Image 1 (cartoon, helix red, strand yellow):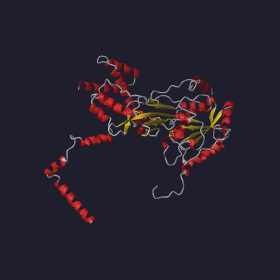
Image 2: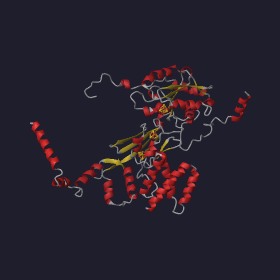
Image 3: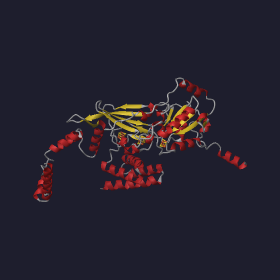
Length: 261
Length: 206
Ligand code: SF4
Ligand code: SF4
Ligand code: SF4
C-alpha cells in the first residue's frame, strides 16, 4: 500500500504443505496391495457448506452402500486409512486439520473432496480461506464436484484404493489454420431465431430454454411446410412431457405469426 | 420378527445400486463435466464472465498473439452458467461424473486462440474466430458477404473506427446543433451563465 510500510512480509498468507517422507510412496503402495481388510475413512470438515458431508453420508446409505467395499466412516483419525478433507480450509480449521493428519497412522491416503477441497471452489478468493486441501497436506486423490454425487464419491474411493483407473486427461488445443465456428440453423431467418430463443428462455428458464429453442429449431430446419406439423408432433410424443408440449406450442404460434408477417 | 424377515426377503438386494460394477443411469438434466469444443469456441470470454467460481479463465498474451482459455474441473461447481451464455454452444454440460484424478494437472483443459490485427494500426483487438463469426452472422442477417465496407469495418479496431468516424465528413456537423440552438436563443442564457461563472473563477484565481 502507498505510504504504509509493511511491517511483516506476506509469508503469513502463504502455506506450505506438510513435507512427505521419502519412503512414504512405497509404504502407500504396500498398503494398497496388502490391505486385506476394510478401509476406514475419517472425514475432516475444513469449512465447507456441509453439502459435501451430506453426499458422503448418502454414499454410505443402503442405496449406494460403500460398505460393500469395506469402506467405513470412523470417528477418530487414529483408526483411519483414508482421510477425507472437505471444504476450502478456513484459517481456523487449518490447525485442527493438520492435527487430524498427524494423528492418522502412516501410511495414510489423503482424499480432497469437492470443489472446495480441490481448489477452493466458490470460496477460493475469500480472505479467510487457504483455498484447498493441497495447500496444507499432500493429496493423493481429488474428487471434484459441488458436491460430488454419491456415485462420483464411490468412483473416487475406488480410485484411491487402486481398483479403478483415472479417466480424465489434461487437454490442450491450439487453434488450427482457418478454424471457424459454424453458425447453427442457418436456414432460419435471424429475426425469427431471436424471437424463438427469447421466448423459450422467458418460458422455461435460461439453460432449459436454450436447449428447447435449439431442439425446436432443429425440427423446423429439417421440415418443409407440409411436414412441420407431423414432425413437431413426433418430437413432442418422444418427449412425452406436457410442459415441453406447451412451450413448443407457444413457440410454434410465434413462429407462424412471424412467417405470416 | 417374522414380518421383518418377510420384508427383507421381499426387498432383496435390489435397493443397492450396482455401480461401479454396472454403469449408472443418470437423469437427463444431470449436470456433469462441462464439455468444451474448441473448434466451435470463438474465445469471446462470455463464459469466463459468467462463471461464479472463476473456474474458467482467459488471458491475452499480446506478445505471442495468443488468447488462452482454461477450465479447471477442480474449481468448477457444475452450475451450467457457461452453457447458458455461450453464443456458439461450444460448451455444454455432459453426463460425465467420473472425474476423480490422482494427478491434479489432469483437471485442467486449455485452448489457445490467435488474435486479429487492426488493418489501420496493426494492434491486436479481438480473437480471429470472433471476428469471422460476427462476419458470418452479419451475412446471415442479410448483408453482402463481399461488401468492402463491411470487412473494412470488421477488421478495424474500435479506436480506429471511432477516429475514422470522427473525421468522416458525413458525421461531422461542426457544432451545428450548438449554433442552431444559439440562434433560437434557447441556449443563450446557459451560455451566458457559464461565462459569468468562468469569469468569477478567473477573478478568484488572481
Ligand atoms: S464443494 Fe460445494 S457442496 Fe462441497 S463444501 Fe464446497 S460449496 Fe459445499
Ligand atoms: S459449470 Fe459453472 S462453475 Fe463450471 S465452468 Fe461452467 S460456469 Fe464455471
Ligand atoms: S462463451 Fe463459448 S465461445 Fe465464448 S469463450 Fe466461452 S466457450 Fe468459447
